[in-house]
Amino acid sequence: MKVIPIIMLAGALALVSCSENSLQEALENAAETHRPLLGHQDDIMYGHTWNATKDADKALERSDIKAVCGSYPAVLGLDLGGLEIDSPCNLDGNDFSLMRLAAQKHYARGGVVTLSWHLRNPLTGGDAWDISSNEVVASILPGGEKHEFFLGWLDKVCDFIASIKDDKGRQIPLIWRPWHEHTGGWFWWGATLCSSEEFNALWKMTYDYMTEEKGLEGLLWAISPNSLENDFDSWTLRYPGDEYVDIVGLDCYCSTYVPQEEAIPNFGSDMARCLSSLQKFAGEHGKILAVTETGYEGLTYENWWTEVLSPAIKDFPVAYVLVWRNTDERPLGIKHFYAPWPGSPSEEDFCKCIENGTLKLLD
Ligand code: BMA
Image: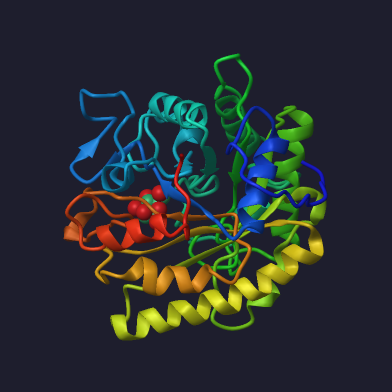
């Protein structure tokens, strides 16, 4: 959607009702009051020892966060990776029909839905992490050999988004977050794989096709640079322009690749550096600020929520903070969990953040 000035709203709002403006207002209100909404990727799709796609119970009532604190997270993240190749399930095994229902159900509960897309590599046939060619973005731009083919993928995404409807048959407003972590070098659209001109052209093409060509409305477009050790500010070279973006978010994780005594202070300084920069940018450009992905894999630091995450975000007007997924299904016994579940070490500490208002769940 095109630029809408930030309206500062006092008091609480029901999270979302039927228009993109009320979604925008709910996010602005959360940012303004420094009460970020808590988001969790795949929250009602699966968690510790359960999986809605595989289990007989498909009521979409379960949630690790609800089991711990009594409410669902305010923001539900879902990923469309796999839709482009007509797979019945996304790249993490979620049945797409059930994902549609989950989005509808979460919206009906008053929540916010955000969609990302770990799409496959349209040139090589590999996955989103296939960085064997730096010609991929060029190949899908107008004039490229895979342009039409890629528009076919976008058609499927548009059809799916348009099919996520409320009980009156209207498409629900949601946050659409394509081409995430584009300042890194691990996805085929990353900074080391295409020029900034190509990236900006890719974003604009995606926007124009989805909104003008396909007429999709009700989306807030979120761009998510990942934290960079040096020169974070240069991410703005890969920014398509104010009329193409509504939310500027940061993807920044607490690393599990270095010892905890390093990871925790590093995370604090990364967040401070990158969020200060993004806050300034968001203020100058009239955009909503968010932490679009974060977390500490395995949550081996019991007080991570109150001692690490809260201090990292508290000084910034952040609309929402989304932690990544809780899955039992990663190989080699890696504990790929970013939210607490009953019996997990950081459970009590997480609930403190909810009770003291640092993070907001659904009412
Ligand atoms: C990554 C990991 C992967 C997953 C991908 C998309 O961060 O969680 O296992 O496939 O996100 O959800």
